Amino acid sequence: MEKPIKRILVGRPTTKFSIAGAALAAMAFLFYSGMKVSSKEAFINGRISTVLSPLPGQLILTKVIAPGQSVLAHQPLGRVATTQANDQVPGLVAQRSLLEIQLAEIKKQISGIDRRLQIYTKQQQQYLAESQTQQKLGEKQSLAILTQLKEELRAIKAQSAFSKQQLQSYKDLYHKRFISRIEYEERKSNNQVLQASQQAKAAELQQRLQDVNAAKSGLQLTGPRTLDAPQQNLRDISLMLENIKQEREQLIARQKATSQSILEVTALLASRQQAVLSSTFDGVVWDVNAENGASVQSGTPVIRILDCNTRWVEAFFDEADASKLRPGMSVTVYLTTSSKITWQGTIKTIRAGSGRVAVGERDVQPPPEIARRQLPVKVLTAHIDINWKDSPEPASFCLAGRSVTVKL
Image 1 (cartoon, rainbow, N blue to C red):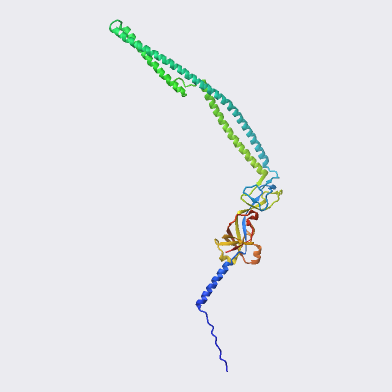
Image 2 (cartoon, one colour):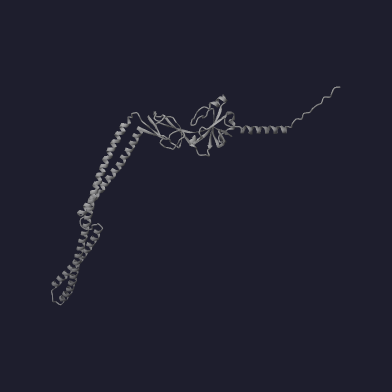
């Protein structure tokens, strides 16, 4: 007998559970793939400036200049002493000599003016003393004249009073017919003359008082407007001294200008004979391109300086991750030799097909090892700004060139 065939029914999952499973799988895949986005290669980059020789000559470096040495902005790193003839040097030497001769002549003129000022100042003091003496004598003379005028006025007043009394007596005698009218009129006229003299003398005394008060202030009210000899001499020598002082100030200005010109020509001459080498910023010596004592030409690279305050990270990613990278994205940077040392950064720019492979370099091709492993696959170069939490360490070149890993 034939055995009956057993049918086994296989159940099918519902559509609801199939869609949910696919979605979870997709999310897990995206999350897992996103977590695995990391750089193929990355390193710390920094700005490097090259100190060039400004003129041909012999290089003389300071003893402390060596890779890893900290330097300050404008710190002398060495100098270049020219060993070639320069056509400008003889002209500059002659120009400086001419300026020095002019400066010596100006100083000689200033010395002569100082002697003249000393002599004229003493003479001015003498004239001033004479003028003061003359003024005191004039005041005494004016006081004597005032005293004399007062006495004369007092005498006239007395005569006028006596004449007035006599005139009254003569008037009575005239009315009584003891004297003639002619004699009475004569006495009356004399009395009027005395009164007029008294008024004139009083006016003269008042004018003299005003002259004395004006003279004390150095003014003159009456007479021709002239000065006495001491005052005239004092005024003349004062004007002369003022002119000499102005001449001296002009010479002092010329002296300062000539001295400044000598300094400028000396500095220019020194720059033609030797030049000092220095950095324009604080940093660390990256390398020394020329040996101490070597002959260099104008424009020869001598020293390269790393700017520890201007550092960033260059990271290379697979181009397949291009859709997962964008400027402004936050990343974590790990030091390759120590995963405990991390920094937070932000992607600034992203470009494809080119990158930076050495500290301080600009436009170069991707690292050879990446190119060999991934040819013909292109790579993405990401410029990442880092929030450096530690101060730069010049002895370790501020970690420039150290390998790091960048992860999203």
